[in-house]
Amino acid sequence: MKYITLISAIWLLTACSHKPQSEATVDSASPAVTANEAAPVALDAPADEKAFLSADAVPPGQPSPEKPSPEQKIIKTARIIYSVEDFAAAKKRVAGIVSQSGGYILAESQHGDGTEKRNQLDIKVPAAAFDSCVDRLTSGVTRLDEKSINAQDVTAEYVDLNARMTTRVATEQRYLEILKQARTVKDVLEVEAQLKSIREEIEAAKGRLLYMDRLVSYSTIHLEYYQVLALSMPEAPGFFSRAWLALRNGWNNVLGLMIDLMGWWPLMAVGVFLFIFIRRRWRKKQSLTTA
Image (tube, rainbow, N blue to C red; front, side):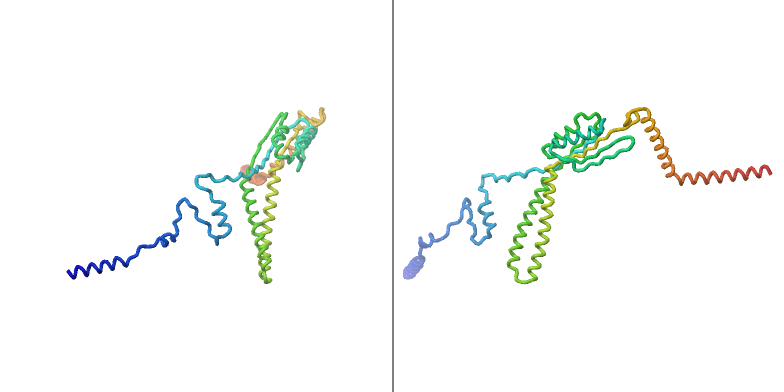
């Protein structure tokens, strides 16, 4: 009986020594962040990271905003070749069409011989008037030898080059700030060398962008027209004019044949050698027979 009483007393003392946790301790624990709550932005995070976490974050269930598509940059070129009956009238007509289209003649090359006259032009017209100008130049043509139109899309190249130039400009500004903080001559020279390289790249990009803008805003037309001066259609009508053209063409044909024969001189030399050799053998054989 003593042992039972002693064990009961020890158990009671042990149970009283364990106190329950206080409500204040439970309430002071920080609650866990639920899945629907957004994590706060760290105060010591970089500025660009804060902007990415806060401003650029798209709420779930909403579509991301679409960026505006860049303006298309299309370079158009055309090549036109046709014959005319009146060379002077055709030249005047082409000049009038180009002027009415708001364009200009960039280059002109006129040449001819006794059989034809030919004029080659490089024409620049505004892109908006390109199609109408091509149609007007080819309308009413009796013989159209060639008409080809080419369109080159340089939008991707233009956007990429523009983005690279923007990055270089931002880098230039950072180097200018570094240059203000330079203390030694060596640091100044190094920063200025980097600035020189970056500025050269910026100027090259600007020049390329301006060149592409020029090609896009003004399309190019390579025009070539000619007038045939055949024997049936001499430049000056009449028997003597036709006879003179016939004599000139005959003489030119003879000269061309002689020049072609001169190119075969090795074969001609071998033929002459064989002729001399065979003739000598034949004479020697004839002399032996008569003897």
